[in-house]
Length: 347
Image 1: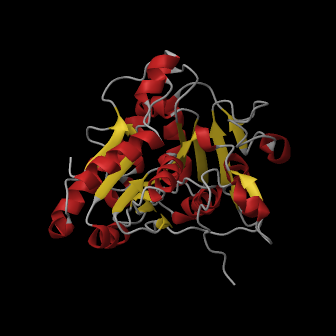
Image 2: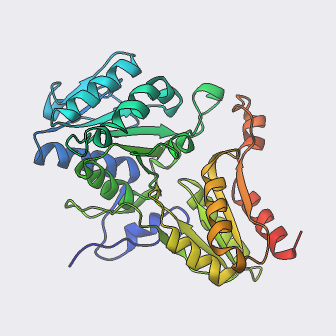
């Protein structure tokens, strides 16, 4: 019997530990386990990145893998993002399956030429004769006063680039399954992880399995409003939905899981039922994923909308360092609750 995803019944997802027959591990452990199994089962898979053999092992996601597989397959590299991305692309073209780990997405733009003009294009430029099976793990999320250059989420920058896939798993189950799927997909994949959910625990099978691209999931069913939440905002959405349920507002929470390809059908079917759409993302508003989802909804299910579409994002300003300003900058479940109540009330 194939494994299937289990919904987030509680906000922390720690309830999985108490479900009979289910194994619970953390998000970071799920990613580490996926890499361990991939390295064990395919000699063409290797990891490379800055500091991946350090004691901390990229927030625990590569911990101990260098000791097990050696430095030829778990390679610590110098700070030279653009050149090293080129090396990763070249190895992928040559038949290897690299997982390149960019510890912070803030510095992924330094490799934009390699990603946009090479990794994303070679398959098309060669008439399908050359694949680039490259996975780029890129970590987002606020820091502890990490400020403007170490707290950004730039996943929407890659939405308009043909040839790339973008995944944003929110649960340990999806993180492991999508990483295995990404390595075996044969195309370049931007794999976006939020570091604030690395310690969240969820149900994860021990054996290898995959989660298909383009298949979102309804985390909570509802009838009054569709709430599409991305990455860590899934957890804030679940908190908000629970609060609003006690006030008579029934929220349907959708986790798209991958934003390119995106499960339009799942989102549109929900909008047809609820007539209202709110999108919560972990990035700035202008030009973001929320704008793309809103545009597609207007194009394809406009007649079903009972109210304007709402977006919940960071302000369009660089991330502040001060804890007080950080608190004001990052939206949470309270902001989602206020937004949805205003939408329901017609404000």
